[in-house]
Length: 260
Image (cartoon, rainbow, N blue to C red; front, side, top):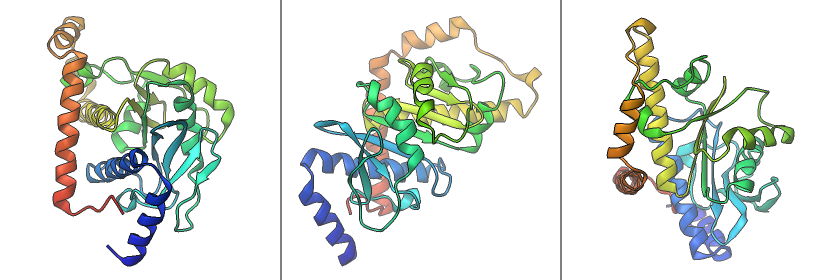
């Protein structure tokens, strides 16, 4: 780690609680994980985490950094309306669409600690399909209910917030029509599990339909029920925790520095 990075880390760490620093490190790791698994669009998109003990504040990436450049100390700390509480060093601006979209969810869903928004090729492809996400795979069945939000414009208008809130309701997964994917989680682990499964389900659908819709075998309600009986929510939650721990070990082996 360079002396400049070490200095930036120390300055931020001295100003925040241990709980916030831990969340910053885990959030930076989440950004690196999405980069590793190809769920990025250069400097676009965003992931937010609520600040422990400060439910009205969230952490968000600066606009201009690639996901594999995100560290614990270069995250913005803002309120739900985008007011900057703590600005990171580096001179990169605040990601405006982040607090419009994410602030809407964090402000009303107090069960949500993390929100992820992506613009992946497969996610956008499925978001542009009239059929939406089809039950073509185990991944899509395990996901549970997916909500939808119709495209209005690039998400920079606060007036769109209420429709995002209404459309998401109490679901944790939403497809933004002609736009991309958004998932919530009560933890870093759960949010990662949700986006990984939803993204995989979208990739499977794109691959399946490339062979012709007439060849697609859609699962029925009995498959849904059998899967839910065998894989209840507490099993999914436990699996998400183990999965995230494995991802963290992978990042450590790769030498990714997230606590700078």
